[in-house]
Amino acid sequence: MENWSQQRVADALKEKKIITGIQHESVLRIHRETGKRVTDIILEKGMASEAKININLAQLGVNDLESFIMSPDLIEKFKEDQVIKHQVLPLFVIGNKIYVSMADPTDIDAQQMIGFVSGYTLIRNIEASKEDIKNLINKYFSRRGAIKKAISGLKPVNTKQEQLLEDRRFTTSAVSQSDAPIVQLVDDYLTRALEKNASDIHFEPQEDGLRVRMRIDGYLQTIETIPASLTGSVTSRLKIMAQMKIDMRMVPQDGRFSRIINDQEIDFRASSFPGIFGESIVIRLLKRRFLIPMEQLGLSNEMLNRFKKAIHTDRGILLVTGPTGCGKTTTLVTILNQVRDPSKKIVTLENPVEYQIDGTIQGQIHPQAGFTWAKGLRSILRHDPNIIMVAEIRDQETASIATEAGLTGHFVLSTLHTNNAPGAIIRLLEMRVEPYLIASSLIGVLAQRLVREICSSCKESYTPTSELMLSIGIKNPDSSLKLYRGAGCRECSHTGYRGRTGIFELMLVTDQMRQLVLKKSGTAEIEIEARKSGMQTLRQDGIRKAFQGITTLDEILTATQEQSVS
Image (cartoon, rainbow, N blue to C red; front, side):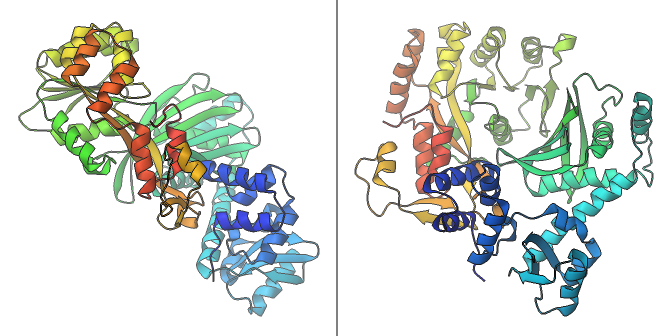
């Protein structure tokens, strides 16, 4: 049985003239950016009707069942035990025919059950593997059963007093039988998030229900929307787990909790935010033992060797830069794991403390109590540290103290929000840090971005056009040059991507650069000097990874929009 990728589904619908060439390009772009299935995008954009999509896919022999627009009303007619017993997945109805996928199309009992339950005697089977049918039965029916069970244990909550009583059900040490379905439902989301390698789970109250989304490889994917009647119970359960005050609904709160899932100890950080339909809660997954070898960050061999030399020092400041969510904390923790030594004292200042690092004194700032970045850093210096990590430099006072510490015999690690490595120097100057402090203490700057890796299960090569090559600075491309992309498969949830890696720009400060700092030179002059001393830009490093088949050129161009290749 030949598998159909999302790319092939889009190509086939274009050939059948269901979508135009321009629509085809738009659909694939949205699919790669969001992970949504091609047919869902076509339907949402109004490019074709549900019936037209389904009948054409059936005629084409598509066996990727999730590419079809399935009918919730049809699925609702069947009971879980019926579809499990016969291994039958109801899909949709067109005219007087019901379309299903059966593990055994010759099963007469199954055919009779389908006709009896649905009322349709004309049955059309769409061929698929037994494993795919089983997986989708579990997805659509087992989840539906868990949600129904949770709903059945609830009573309507109409008043504030009744809501408080509902909340108190979850504050008891033992979980009652009526609470168990909600507990299981929430635990299931935590487990699924870990299995999908999600970084966050978003519980978002909407007018029609509680939307559950997960951020996977940097992009939010909608998992499902559960009935609005469960919103209060799910919210209460999450807040109790995170040790939040459940009777406070009009102000944001933060909390955290731990769980052992699949033999892994996981910390979860929770944050609530009051919205018009209820409290939105975001849960971040934090692996407690976060030990990543430096070789797995994504640095090239040459860059890795230069970076390792830079971090094994007794004094100076090293900065990691980039936007929020680009992996700066991961890099800092990796550096600390690399330089840890029983003979050295390491102290950190963070907000919040995300990952526990053995052998390290980790502090968390509390601005409301007067424990600020600057005050915390001054206190750290009185504890005789060898290595200091300040999670973020935000103001002039912290920046000045950090650079002074690097000058007076401490190795300081920190982060800044800048687009590239040379921009870190300009940012420090804008913060009114004295040029001599920057020139004397700054060792180097590592700028980074996270990009999605191509799914190894559906990776395919293609020959780029000369126009595409010209756009990245290659004027006379070799005809044998190949780029790569993911066609989209079940392993990567049809996105074409699975996992993320970094692209980097390492600028080590030279004597010539120090002279430019003292003169308060601009970014362009500093970047020219950095390139002379061996710095590759983020885009150059990314393009190298694209030709190696690690990521796509689309990812690189998106991640480095502010850069150009010379």
